[in-house]
Amino acid sequence: MRTNRTNRTARTARANRTAGTAVAAVAAIACLGALSACGPDNGGDQNAAPGKAASPAATAPAGGTATGTVAPQPSGGAAKPSAAGTSAAAGSRDVPAGTWINPRSIPLDATYHWPAPAGTAKSVAGAPTFKLQELCHSKLSPDTADLGTGRAAAQSLLGAGGPDQWQAQQTLLYEGDPRPSSGVAQSAHAVFSDLREEVKACAKSAPGATVKVTSPEDANYFAATVTVPQAGGNAVTLHEYLTAPDGTVNELAVWTTGKSGAQPKVPWAGPADADVAKAMDSALCTTLKDC
Picture 1 (cartoon, one colour):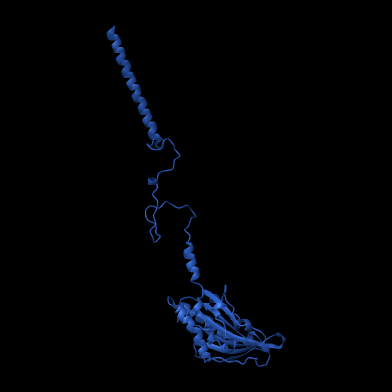
Picture 2 (cartoon, helix red, strand yellow):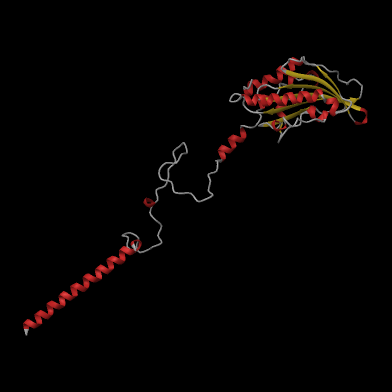
């Protein structure tokens, strides 16, 4: 009897061991099917964020170029320029203050003591209207019009402009730095040539106007005296100066309005045309170093 009980006990132990092995095997298979639930550190939270090691971040050195592994960016997420880069680009388009003519070199300064043009200068959006174009009712030709905006433009008006008083205005159209490309200088010269022809043809666009060119034909500047009739029996007398040092179109206009045929109350006086043109270009050459 004791032998039979011993045998039954052994068979029961073997059966229990077999069952335990089967349960362990089933648990192992289930764990392999759901690794995320069986990780050693996830604490059973299947929605936990992956650790840093699972998604290495890119690093950017001082130069701004990313190194290492970079995660893909969302579609449509193109990089944008930094604010500093945008500001620098915009600032390079401005006309520097030092490019304006020395007011002591403007005709009639002995009488009017012109203020510094930089003090009243204003940026011009788009293509500036030169004084000659305003009086002659002219504009750039279709072949040149697209060059009329340049990279930057500014204008400075001087003088109160009372009855029979003279006023002065300087206009600068900056096409860009001519050193990298001769095309910039060619653009400025094309606008200069167009403006010169507009002055010569002023009588066609402003009926009754008279034009007297005072600069030599082969000069690197242009100067003329223009008289344009106005309504009410008045006339504008304009002394026009144009230069085009590499990359910049430069106009100095000095004018007065009075009765047609009458002499201005303040007689015309000033340096020679060539000296005025030299003063116009001197500041540009020094500041922009473009000629």
